[in-house]
Amino acid sequence: MNDRYETAPAATATRTARATTASTMRRDRAVRIALLALGLMIVTAALAPSNLFGQTTPEMQQAREETAVVYDLGRFFGYVHGMTTESPSLALTDTQKRKIAGVIEQIREMRRIEPEWAEEQLTYLELELLTPAQLMDVDRRAIEWQNTRESTGQTGSGGGT
Image 1: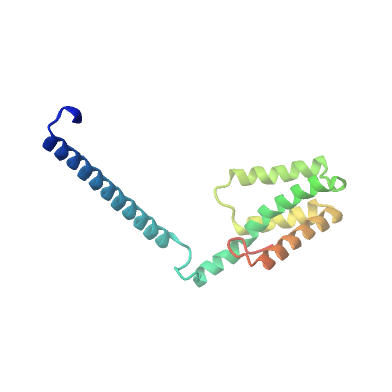
Image 2 (image 1 turned 180 degrees about the vertical axis):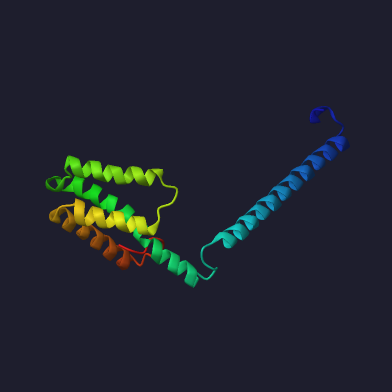
C-alpha cells in the first residue's frame, strides 16, 4: 500500500518496520561478510606453505631448492626472448628455434616438470644449443636478474638462477 493513503500511525509503523528490516538486512550482510573473511583467513592459513610467521619448514626449503632448476628453465626462455629482441646479431638460427620449440612442446604436454628433466634440458640448451656469444648474453641477463633480486631483497619461489 502507498504511504500517502495510510493513516499517520499506520504510516509510521510501516516506515519503522521497513527501517528495522533494512537494519536487520545490513547487520546480516555484515555478519556474512565477516564470516566469509574469517573462513578465507582460515583456509589461507591452512594452505599456506609456511607458518604464520613466515618461516618455512626444512621440507619446504628442500623442495624449493630441488625445484629451483625448473624456475631456471622458465627464466632461460625469457632471457633468450630478451636476447633475440634486443640483440638482433644474436638472433637464433632456424635450427635453434626448432629445437627450442621442441622443448617447449614437451613442456606443454607435461603435467609436472621434474627437476631432473629440467636440469637435462637446461644443460642441453645452454651448453649444446647456444653459441658462446648467445650463452654469454643469456648468462649476463641471469646475473642481472639475480643482482636485481638481491638488491631489492626479493625472496620466494624459484630461488635459483
